[in-house]
Image 1: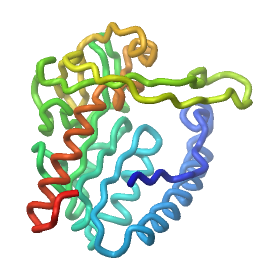
Image 2 (image 1 turned 30 degrees about the vertical axis):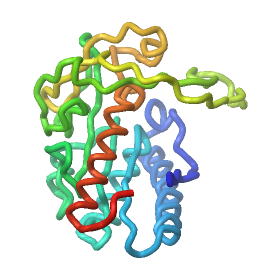
Image 3 (image 1 turned 90 degrees about the horizontal axis):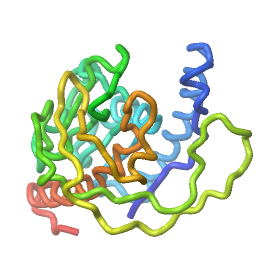
Length: 249
């Protein structure tokens, strides 16, 4: 089963216009919803069920805070298969400060966290991107070196109708989610370097449409590695079950 929190997300202006104190208040407010959703989730799955955390972008900011405050160093850490906290600014120093949860460094390691922030070959990240955790989603190694395109399990293109324009009137635009398409393997090579995931240039029109200014692949961090993430989650679930003598789902 997949559970997703319904929470009052901080708007894009938290990142580009709001004074830091006001922006942080917006994030704190959103986080209270995430915590309540997580508590509801735990009540629903019962006291022994294992789980995976997964997030992206602002969700990863909240997800890492949730991991640090509610999971790390508690009995919940023993139930966590992995935390896929993708596409934010999870710092090496923050991860090192966790008590029991480590950064993943193998494809079948459990109880650990995964993070990467992706750029294309012409990427120009600013100094706020220094010192990040990078786990390469093609070889699942921390600070993972080059992995060639033949190891790429497959992108899955977004399908439907979405609002990708940030600076428009605050009105409903009729978002429609379509069925997932066929996986497209072999599209990407990738390497970790200085805390960032550097990815080969993407030429598929639907993938290029998700690239933002500065050759930032933020919008590709899940869809480009969809099958890599999906198959890896299955591998970690199997490893978790085997280590505890549980039947595999």
